[in-house]
Image (cartoon, rainbow, N blue to C red):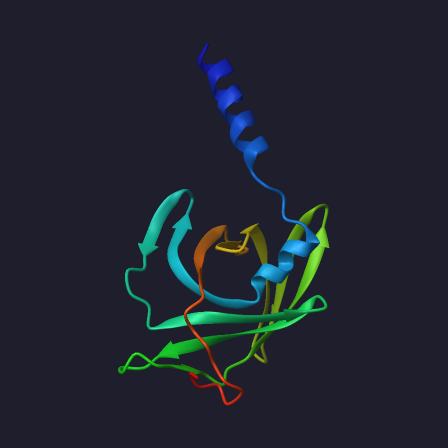
Length: 144
């Protein structure tokens, strides 16, 4: 009986998860604040306050990612460390192929919609982000 219940619950949970489509990738654009880090199903770290958020700028299967830092006065400024990435789709799953001058690595996009982003790295660590819509940066990388 327990096995039947387990498989039924597993089927319900896996069938209810929304598959990411290529049009969903446009949700990457914008500012994302990390909420928590999960490893092997256990929350490793929860973030109550963040001094920085990540900005994704994505177009035509390529993009950049960098940190936006909150200043002591509550304003935001974009740092000048740019991480390039491209998107790879393999068997219905989308991956971020990250590149810096020091390293290359791959992350799976597990969930993505207008409010939530979950990325899993090659070690199986999941990063949960929420969308921030209250940050506006000018072309000079400083808050408008």
